[in-house]
Every structure is written in structure tokens, then in C-alpha cells.
Image 1: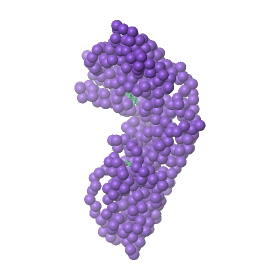
Image 2 (image 1 turned 180 degrees about the vertical axis):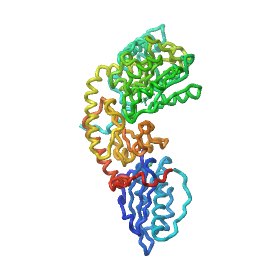
Image 3 (image 1 turned 90 degrees about the vertical axis):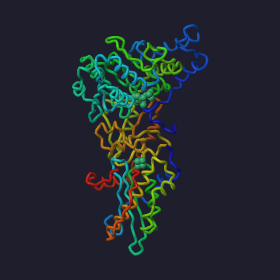
Image 4 (image 1 turned 180 degrees about the horizontal axis):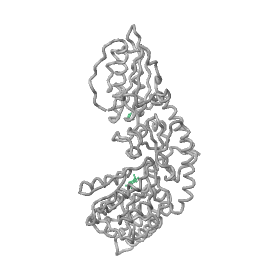
Length: 139
Length: 405
Ligand SMILES: Cc1ncc(COP(=O)(O)O)c(C=O)c1O
Ligand code: FES
């Protein structure tokens, strides 16, 4: 299977690889997937308390090229967005942007799940109610 | 001079040796005859060529030419050998013993037999990929007619104790079939010394053409017979009907001859390269060889690089280096390699594996390049891996509640 240009680009020059202080109150961390499934994604956001805008986003991913590209793209999209808008990012947006083939859709679902998990972690830390998302069930 | 791309997926298929191609070409054009045409020179030429190739093939494995049945490849040989024995010896029993690291062509054939009323025991292998001979012997019962254990495994290269298996089979009056697809042409295989009753192998894993292979069927001590699986003109002593693939057979014969003559020198060179590759890659932290390293094909290495995922790793260099991985992400089924799992490897290690298969055409420059590329990519991906970070921080990954899906 050949990879799309955009997947290759993100894979070769991933954006925002790294770690934020997960103990910080401003940082939300989402850790999704499982080593046994061959994919683990950790996505972190740093939120500006006053504005609710995501100031920084970082990821680390154990997974295939499409999973790495999906998380790299997600961090790019997250920066500068409010957490409410960020919560509406859909995995199909990622599929479209990266031209992922059907077998790689679950890699994008993982990225969406990681975004939501990070947002909820932030909300929980800050005494906000956690958002309820409907199951994608594409895994 | 470095020649790119580097091909290290020789367990999947090998390139054809140009010397093989050369011998085949006339049999597509001038000498196009049907080897079964008895009444004119076109047929005679074809038959002569087939006879010669049959000798070349037989000689490589220490067989008599009459014991060679040409097939379309190892898959067909697995089917014909196992189903053929199952049907031919139905009077004697219906039980077959095999192992859970066999190729799908064997495992699925056995599943098929189970559906049609046969009984199959699937032996588990030990951590190093070898079967336990005591388990094997204990599995034999009065209804056992066949032991089907591969010579060498296609994913990890582990060589089974074939002689010992054969001795156990003989002691209990059971036939011994072996899928020697990965072994023939690479290491000495001798059906007499090894005590093999039936054996399948294929041209395209030994620098020959695709679509041609052979089933060895012993004619003496004991005389073995298989029931044909295709009805037709009764070619190949009635065991395999169908007009012979003369150019394929000629090429297969030549490939066998080259392997026989050049095996020693090839093995010396290739095993040095394999060892160089392995030693260098094992210098990386948390890199492990899968399978027994001593009882192993000289050109194969299977290594897990913990905390990086196989497909992601391949992507770092797969424009320039052809390899395969036991990772689920590279398979359509999204299941990691069942062979690695049979060794007791956790899914995470199975996902992190690469399989290297070197060949007659692999050069030292290519190996140096591969070492450099893989080492760089592993380090780069580990910087990106949350699991590596946890490992470095000493976090117990089993303590985390993963969201399995
Ligand atoms: C051990 C083993 N058996 C059987 C086969 C199938 O061989 P063929 O492609 O000739 O049918 C292979 C090749 O993938 C193999 O490695
Ligand atoms: S992480 Fe397995 S296919 Fe993408």
C-alpha cells in the first residue's frame, strides 16, 4: 500500500512531538490505544485558563505511519482552537486531509479519541463536567 | 557500490537467477512441446528437458528422480501431500499431528481435513520455536497416520529437529511429511539421511521461477502413495494431472543445480552478512531476536525492537529497503503474526518485529546501509513513542489500564 504525500510528510517531519507536564492544571492528557493492539497515542493540550484557547499541543505515538501522521496533524489543528471547538474535530476530517485508505481509518479514530480524552482530562482537573461522546465503534 | 532498493524479503520470494532464466527461454519458444506428446520430436524434446530437470531436482535432496512429482508450488504440495495421505491411508487411521507455527498452506489444509472428519493435533512450540519431541511422541495414537512438521519456519527461520522427528515417526509406523520450502537450496536437505517420507518445496524461494514446485514422495522403505487431488490425464504417475509446465520445470531444475553447487560458498558469505546485521542491530537497546538462534537458517533473522511499531518502522525506509514485519498494521487481518505469538511473545513484541531474509544477491554495502537506516529510524521513532518514554521513566506498563478495542 502506498502512503499519501501528506502522511509521508507528517511522518518524516512530525509536528509537535513531545511531552507537556501532565501534573499541571492547565494540561490535559489523553492516552488511548493499547500496546497489544499495536497502537498507543498520547496527546496533550495546554489550555489558557482565561480564554479556553489551546496554547500548545504535543503528541507521542506508538503506531503505524498513519497513526503518527494523524496525531501530528491533530496537534497542529488543536493549537489556537478553543477547547469547545476542538471537541468537534471528527476523525473523518483527518481521513480526508491525509487521504487515509479504509484500513487506516481506525488510526484517525484513535486521534479523535485522544483529543477527546485530553479535553476531558483538562475539564476534570478544572472541575468541569466531562463531555460525553458517542462511540465511534470503528476499531 | 550501493544498489538501491535493497531487497531483504527473500523469505517471501527470491529474485530469479539470470542463469535460470537463460535456460528457460528456449522452452517458451522453439521447444514449446508438450512433454506428454509421445509421437513427435517436439514432445520428445520437452520430455527430455523434464527428465533432466527431474534429475537436477532429485539430486539436490538426495532422492530418486522417480520420487519427484512436479506441482505448481509449495501450497499445492502441502495440499497434495497431506490430503493425499489422509485419503490414501483412510483405512489405517484419520489422525494427523502438526504444529501451530506451520505455514497457512499446512494449517488450513489440516482445518479442511478436520471438517471432513479427520482429527488433527496442533502441537504448541517452545519459546524458541522448536517443537518438543516428547510432546510429539505423546501425541501419537493408534489412529495417527501422518506427522506434518515443517523443516524451517518462514518467519523466524528456526529449523526443526527433522531427523529426530523422522525417527519417532518410523518407530511408530507413522508417515512424516515436511514443508521444506524455506530450507531446500539453503541448507543441506537429504531425504534419505533425514528420513523424510514426503516433502514439499518450491522454485521461487530458491532463485527459480514462480508457479513451479515439487512434492517428494518416497518409493522405498516404505513405498508411499498419495491420492490425486485433481482429476485428469494422469500425469506424474497418476498423482498430479495437468500438462507439465516445461519452462518452469527446466528453470526449477537449473535453480536446484545452482543451489547444490553453490550452497557452501553462498552460506558462508550470507551467514556472515546476517551475523553482521544482527550483531549491529542488537546493539540498540531493547532489541531481541525471535526464535532459536542456533537451529536457524543462515540467511534469516527476526528481531523485535521494543516500543516501536513494525509498520511505522518500515515506513522510515521502505522506499529503499524491502522487509516485512509481524505487525498487525501490515496485515489485512489486523492480527499480529501467529508464529511470533506461538513463541509466547506478547502482542506488543510481535507488533515490533522485522523479518530479514538475505539472499545470494545481498551485498555487504546493502547490509551496512540497512544497519544505518534501521538504527536511525528506531531511535527516531522511540523519541516519538509514549511507550519508550514510560519505559525510560520506569513505569510499569502492565499497571496502566489500556483501552483495548
Ligand atoms: C513454509 C512455506 N510453505 C509454503 C509456502 C507457499 O509456497 P508457494 O508460494 O510456492 O505456494 C511458503 C511461501 O510463502 C512457505 O514459506
Ligand atoms: S496503528 Fe495499526 S494500522 Fe495504524
